[in-house]
Image (cartoon, rainbow, N blue to C red):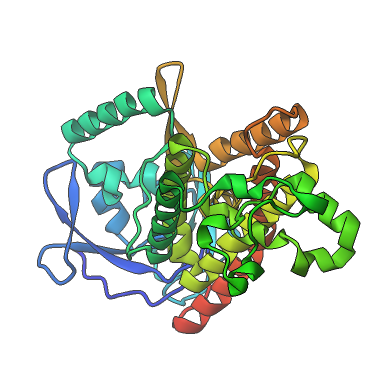
Length: 406
């Protein structure tokens, strides 16, 4: 087995995380399993938990992929300059083709002879180092069958392999808020009828400022109605922002229209949000989610044709999180059932199709529509615009914490 000291380096591919050591022990001729670092008879590689790329010291890739494959010897002698730094800090790596094995070039250090594999290259050339590759084939088949059966009923996507390594407390808190608020709706403590337009576009129920005058929480209006906000603006101008019910753009996202609405939103928030929160950090993620929800709600107020119905739901914030996931994990795979067939799609394919569907449905929207298509679309657009800025900050922060920045 190889001796491999820890690599203190920024991921040379996505640059969004420091490389993390992974110890692997051979189970049989075809399978390896991840074990606790420090055990005997292990091979240690260094992997990125964001893009799933991995660094292999000289000889490790052939050992883990099966020495019969001789991948390292199959590297094309001709090479091209790479922009990526060797994780050991030796020099810039070189790109080598692997003719007949994989279409994309791999990065190879001419000094220490190590090899870097991007996530999709690792799944093809060193699958035994991935969670999916380490799983028992029979268990993997049974798990996939169970997922397929569940997806036939609910038609929701399922992540294939993108585990988080810490508890996503902000996501869990938001889920608790959504479910608790919906429970209050069922109990009648929160009543959407309070949002019906009254005189001069003011809600028929109480507003936040009325609490100081003795109004009850049961009387509060917490959801925007497009016609009401438009009338308030026409009557009061910018003063409507403080004297009207425009504050509901910040409260509408924790209310929902039914069980399917709230449970569907909770599911999408959890499968996409846990990874994004881990990458963004808790405070950034919380602010990002609320901002996307407000932007989505504002777009719905301005563009919807269904101007008389209260606008509710966390979909704008969740759409922003989905856009962030697209930026951060575009190659991660999702299971989706289409016509009884379970497809394994890259996240970018699923999310581009989803965003396109929102745009089309927004164009054909009628006054009787019950879905906030513009909230989805503009929440997604907000996430797509803001995420690169957050990732740039994240990359600078990671570079400061490692010995070998990318």
